[in-house]
Length: 109
Image (cartoon, rainbow, N blue to C red; front, side, top):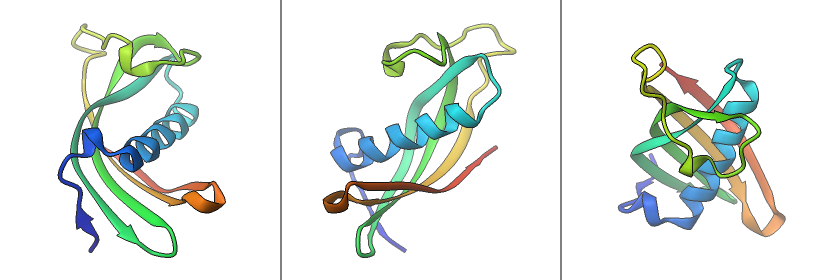
């Protein structure tokens, strides 16, 4: 289902979808600190009258408050109880020409 994206770190569509998913993830979490993507494990795209991105990523909690704008430059927590990484699956549906983006699925372990 869907085709693998070979270099998701440099794929503009994946990055936009992931940024959106993480914004929603942080909005929904009760943590004081924002979380960010540590590593993209896999990313697929599926063309369905738009593009559906299926992404599996490792997420870590940063030392930045949720109001921070540039999360990728935030340092990750180093204390063992805060430093645990979470593996998340995000499914983001985008229709670029209509400027639509939706988080269809967000599940983390």
